[in-house]
Image (cartoon, rainbow, N blue to C red; front, side, top):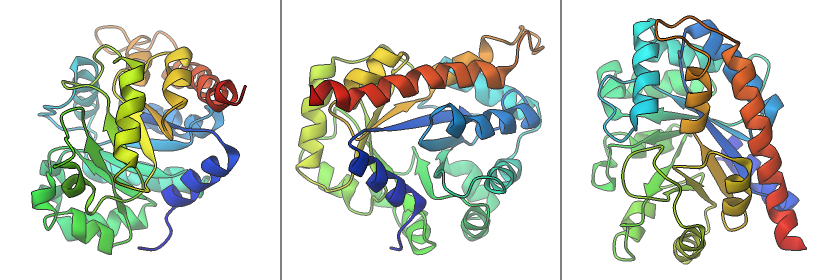
Length: 280
């Protein structure tokens, strides 16, 4: 596979001796224009890699916050085509920050796999996380995506044992996303010592970077997890920052892009302190 923006960014951060801050937001939440401003503000606020959520009506792996964000986006008219357009708009001013599209297979399947991969590549997408496609179904999307020059990032969980792990890692590229708990997104943060041993176990099977997510909400949590992981993934906290400035009927009481930028700035400071703490 050719060198991707994800590979280059992870290698650069490794050389700098610090973990990546990977930020997830829902495309189209609360509306297309606001969401595009949120996306454009992420690198400035300190995000190293952007996960762009594809809204879907039945997101079974997501907690209430991300489900609600997806429904807000769908209600505002967000589609897969508009989510690709958002990436293309972002790329006009930023050719460096990696973009990973994250979501479920159904919208991609309906759109058409070949058409989706062609347009994703043209829009500047670098990788995919599709949470409901197991390795046994790699021929559906994973292998065509890799052939198209996109990283296919796989999830590993606390229940992914040493027997299963090689299968999960088989066609994975970019990085491994370690989901640090079983259950839905946005649950309580796990025991950080367990996270460190899990990261070490995964690294025993692969040279790929390991990024850890599910439950990181504060700069301090980001710092602690960043001491053992190559990246810290934050999603629910960002989606909550958007929701916190919306009234029940969807009016904005403050600027969602500013709310997200403030949160990400704090998380970025935590991640940047991670290796410094180890170095001391």
